[in-house]
Image (cartoon, rainbow, N blue to C red; front, side):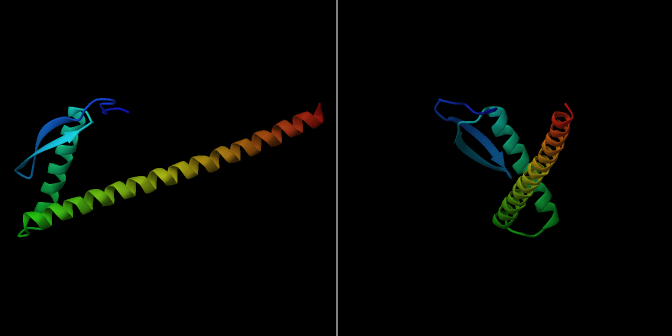
Length: 107
């Protein structure tokens, strides 16, 4: 798994999200953790700009909801693509079988 520290103890990282510092443990690499930190801060800033005068807790919850929505949308898209590819492969297999059957009967 890329970015995963397999068979090792979790490493500890200091991250800052929305001006708050957190010390977290993870089996993922530091670059993975920094990407998460960047994504959280970016999303938090976007949400904060849209919903002015809300508490930090409300903005954090809205940030989590936005990220969860993005994740579920991505998963649905991936599933749809997978199903589409499966249908395409099945269609190609059917066509190939048809061609092979015709060639076998013509031989």
